[in-house]
Image 1: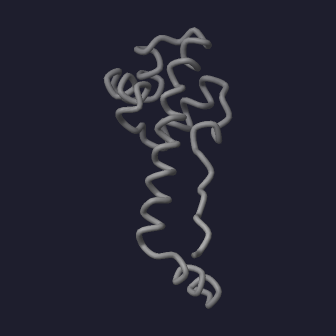
Image 2: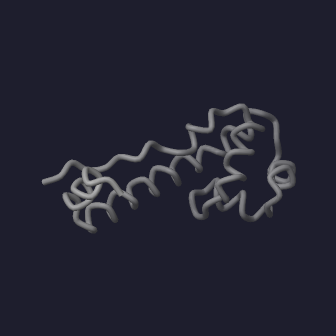
Length: 99
């Protein structure tokens, strides 16, 4: 690990990184909850999408309600199938400024 990176990591207490991770997770779940609108707009039903993604209908339904995560590869497949930019599902990582 480079010295600059080590110093940068030392500037961020674990709590700040944990809150950053939680914020990113919240944004990911919010974005994933848009999945239903994208699916409906493309005329794809829940059963079809689940089969195309190789996951259960239950998991897709829970993901659409922001209750569960889809596996990363399923997210990428869903974005491609529904003609949505992959980055629309994955929020940028924001690191809080050091104090």
